[in-house]
Image 1 (spheres, rainbow, N blue to C red):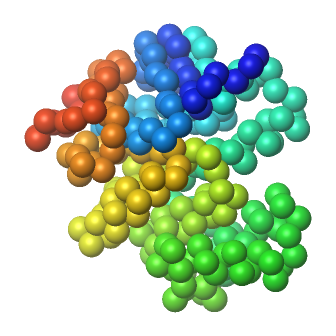
Image 2 (image 1 turned 180 degrees about the vertical axis):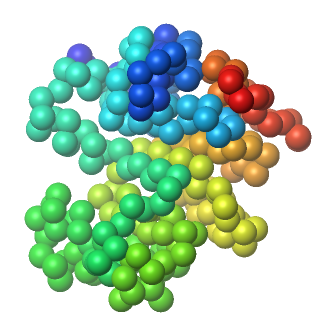
Length: 243
């Protein structure tokens, strides 16, 4: 299928499931993410935010409905095409970078460049140093990644996702568990990053993203709801089914 101009992710009538079999976490997802969008999707714990991002990235199939990434159904791709598509979408999940603990912070960021681009260690190190500088991690470059506190591991996940220069970046609950200073850094960094990348962020609450995100939606009681381009002060996602 020919890539739909400017639409990078499309879900139509999608039912989003979790990792185990059972009823969908979310139903009726009709969603189009265009280039240069900055979506913020709210939802409480267990609402299906992580599963939604997995489907949006093409890593997981919806239980029902249609999903397309860059205009293509992931099931229609060859293995080579699937690998190439995954390089175009960076994902940072809530539980951090999932780093290789025995490698240094610098080596963790350089590794995708050596593996996917066949760069030399020296070439990858130069680019990795620049990413560590941008994300405030340069002081941790030679430390084992497993020694980092969770807040810094989240930044490591971001730096590693940016290493391959993805067109789309999906971030799952990046503000969770962070102190106000760390939250301010993320909000400012992602706002600036959105000038060059298409972003989708999930969050337990939408309020911190007012004036940062450009499109808003939420998952509430198993439903997908568009909020619009502005959110009302005090707006929080509704209760999750079964909680």
